[in-house]
Length: 283
Image (cartoon, rainbow, N blue to C red; front, side, top):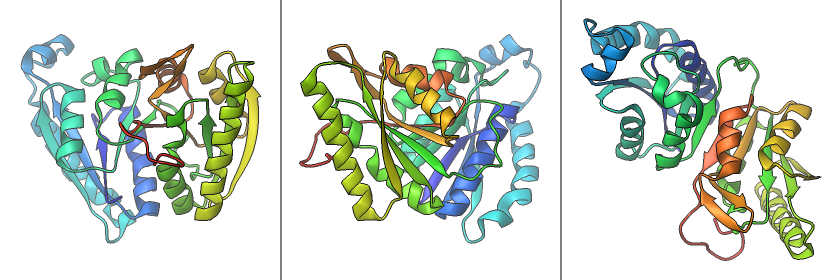
């Protein structure tokens, strides 16, 4: 991992996301690229911004903001870029062009970023991003270091694929991973799959020297169960796959991911499943 992107609109939620990203970048020794998206004038008019040069305002704000935090990254750099267009399209395009390792976005924007960050629209960047995304709702305490990560395991093969990035982040922060076996069905074969996958993830973390423990819960609603468990152990992060089980079918950005991103008071790391699965853990 070498570069992280943070979507910034200078409102409270995105500043909160920036400070979270700064903490991660410092610990994991990554560069930070701050991206502001200047929306087309016709859209800006909706928010009374017709006569404002938002791009110039953003440039000035970045020039004042970056020197205040650059020293915290030591040898790594904080830079910025201003793009124009649809927010989620420009953020994901920049992530692809920059070969970013991670995108960090704040939810509950109130003006220029509102149509993207608010409510279900927050899923656009998670679905379209070429790399993992951390979404952070407004009001989350930014001062806590990353110490506990919830790793939900369901009965899908893809559930294990997030182990690589979770293990990396856990090792950077000396965090503990809580492997949460989530049983949605009473069907024996499905429950055995959950047990098997959790065991494989546990062995992977043992090999990588990642501190972890295993727990389990029966859940009618996977998102609520994961969130409740994260609250119970005072976790700093929930790691999910964007493709999760729903009844007998898998859905891209399915209900579990959608609900978790939109409702979690804890930052959420969303990882896309790979198109092909290798043997073993399928990394």
